[in-house]
Image (cartoon, rainbow, N blue to C red):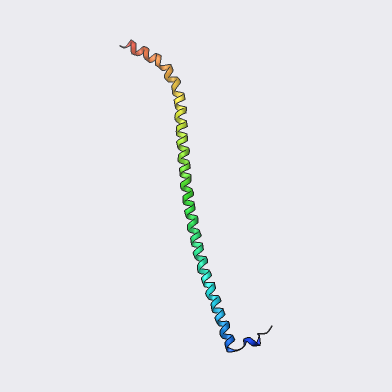
Length: 98
């Protein structure tokens, strides 16, 4: 496979060099853009992970608050019968010690 006879002159050589330089410049620009995109994607992923962690913390605090409320109600339900059972006995002791 030979080189075209139309591209063997000085002007053709200059045109090929200019084209090659333009292609190299384009590749360097694309490289810079891809590096910048990669950095932006990493920052976005880190920010998204941070937002997700904050959301999970909020969800956990809501769950903890719900658990505390549930536990308080369960404790109240357990203590209430004891209080009802102790009240007459305590009333008798108070009356006896007056």
